[in-house]
Length: 221
Image 1 (cartoon, rainbow, N blue to C red):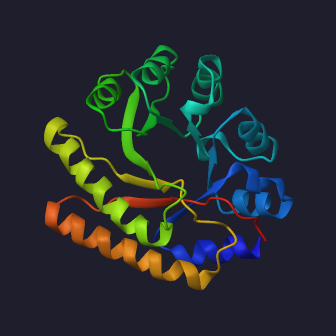
Image 2 (cartoon, rainbow, N blue to C red):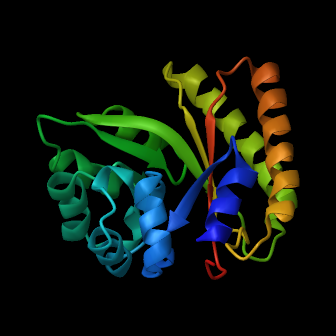
């Protein structure tokens, strides 16, 4: 739990998203609940862990690729999860098919192909809020993350130009941002990310987005 808290402080103002498996530590789960942290779920086991430890569904980010169609419908329509990372038009159509009248489902793009972007923007009761980009596991996340953030902001600027919509979240995951990294290891990439955001937004005249970093492998302490 102390290590997670140190992560959170060192990354600020970059936001930390916890993997659901980290919640198996009851102290980490309590800390996540108390601080209303975002939790990522990639499959049914992750979902059961997150819900079972008391994480509010609105704090969950569901990666649609790890769920069946019925499971994805349950996450959106029944649980009311906060965000869904969608990668295909078929996943978006499932979200549209189960949309409920009293709420809108926020969607993060797992890919920015034209068909997926259009499917979300034209889907009733869907709100497109950001772009998720993974760093390859073989790459150094601490040097790659700022570059990826810059690329995502450029892509979001293109989406704004094409569709007149402003996205507000840059999500970086899949790299080696392990929970076993020390605070000193995180301060430098956090500063580099912030500098990249400043430069990209100034160059593209794009409103400053929130950057979210997904914690990856490495045991919480």
